[in-house]
Length: 323
Image (cartoon, rainbow, N blue to C red; front, side):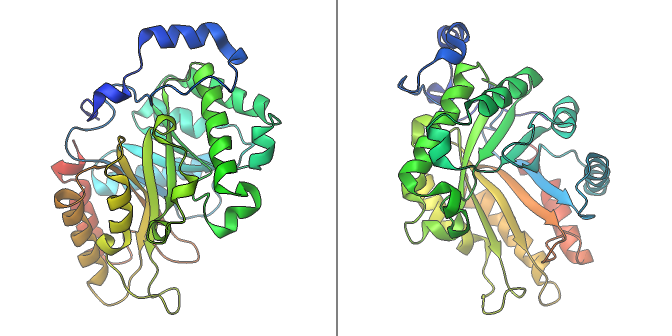
């Protein structure tokens, strides 16, 4: 994978002096210490084009062996290695897993979806030992890693642990402070909201602030026809509000999850083709995309038809997504 220096690199660079300082302070760094600018390891964000990744799972058992086999088979079919690989973990599960280490060794960037936990307890320090151990373990893997903690925290289904925007923000900053104190400079934090939350203002109160976020991301789906009453909508319609909100901010943007089902013959293929056009012509600040390539309650797989797979493969091998 060859990628270039990130755009707006002056804001993202971490200085050697700060790196030495946090390594000396270690876990004693108080929460009152101000955040540094976001740090993105050099040569991670393409100057032009976007990283191309996916979550891949069809068997449902989630074992490392099955996930490896499915990912390798999908990569072979697409004719490329993914730039990064999305995975899901509970809050107490070790993040530096066999699969994450394998991704790092294989040249992929792990995109770790780390489940949320009660923000009141996080802010109170009750989970500091867990957070610190996760930071050290991911730091020691060495390669670049993206963590999206508590994704979609503004969603109603997450309100039981997120509680409110201010508490979510405090918890996010608490976690990032510990990671920075432990010198985990290879770990980038992606804040990810729900596409519809950018149309109604719900997402904004949960945003931790530019100094605490390395990537700004979003999840969005075309739910038709699987969900009754949901209209068929395009990639551009799903993500336009997010892009308008996030583009002025000083961080690379990420479509962390997206998916489309089959409806009429050829329609899913056309949806993929239009999505690629939008990304290449109207969403230039989206620097990473990840497709939700899985079979669950809905069939999001890229190969639900020959035409959908052919168009998706054309996107995967397009030079724009092989920056």
